[in-house]
Image (cartoon, rainbow, N blue to C red; front, side, top):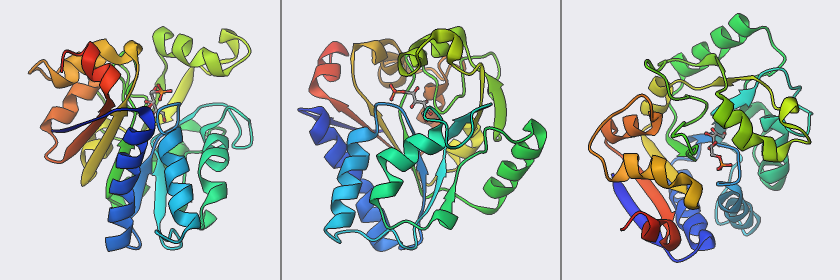
Length: 242
Ligand code: F6R
């Protein structure tokens, strides 16, 4: 695992964006795996900025998102499809037909099948990840067994509470979601994980400092991947004693 420590959130986002820009400049039709949440917002701004200056061209790039809330329509302002449109896609020259995101309103087994077929045919070139404070990646929540393929999952109370900051009431947070499985994530050729803030210290300790792979902290599975870049700011590095 390669660790990059930068002085600020902005510097981390620039370093992460640069990895995606270099990939797309050498592989015009790269399939990039994308995340939502607070973590990637700055990286997405960097990509929009680079695209607007023609330092990178998204016209042949394909994207797939890690996850989507079950039960929300794509145009709901808390759906991940909406987040992606507002925070990234509307600023890029990416083609709508090259964007893949699970449909929160689709019937569960049909949507799992559709997305599993997608991952059977396509390998992600570079996967962007944040990390949950409980160590989840995508919505692979801590559990005795982790699921390999794309699937529906119930969300843990911890994740519902963490995500309630985006909703008016905690009761409005969907109780379930679709997510890429750990196997789909591990098949990505390269993985870039960004993390910031004190709430991530426990999970990041398990990822960076312990030597265990623990399904109760799903991110630790990434230790078995040959090409992972972790980017954190100096503040988090300090809290981790790095
Ligand atoms: C989002 C996702 C989640 C987040 C994680 C961290 O698509 O898959 O695993 O990356 O919950 O969220 P933030 O970045 O808001 O701290």
